[in-house]
Image (cartoon, rainbow, N blue to C red; front, top):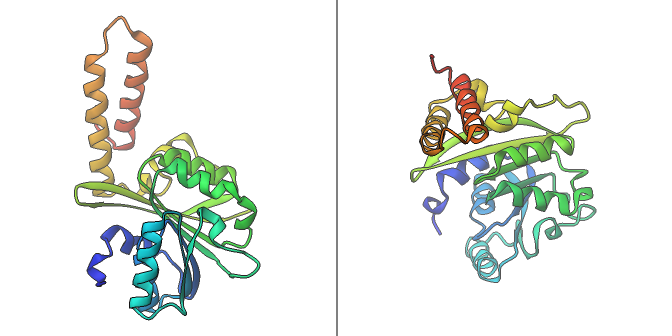
Length: 232
């Protein structure tokens, strides 16, 4: 396996992993991310968790091929069941390439295991609003966000840390991202300009008589234009 197999998306996820972390990578697939981070000297060790037999076997093979079996443990397990907080010393968790609802469900299944986790690095393929809402409801503060594009697809990365004093997220923060909407990068603008056009197209197909539905989309359009600073 060569580093070229690590996607830009996963490279960016890896950039948020703290130096000398003990990592749990959930849904590790072929263990590309843990291998990359160990080879870089970024992390002390990792657990690559995979619930599907095929990718689990591939991950085991890849780790062995790089001679990293002493640094990376590959486990066939679902979600947080892949680690024991009293034994493994995991302090950082990455979950990439799943829907936001599924990521939240995985974290919520054994929430007591998150007590000693210092950083969550999450890359949802959708359901960002739901995931941000879950994090806030469970005492995790969003510390970093990133939006990127790869192979004509847009991805968001959400980094969160436990906090006893949370800054409450507004509805706009939940939908657009508290950091992303302040930074308003070019990729952020591209995403929401696309959403704006999609909403406008839907609105054009809604009968004038369907006033409630039309108002729903008019409100969505107005909010996106507000966030994007679209001049009226």
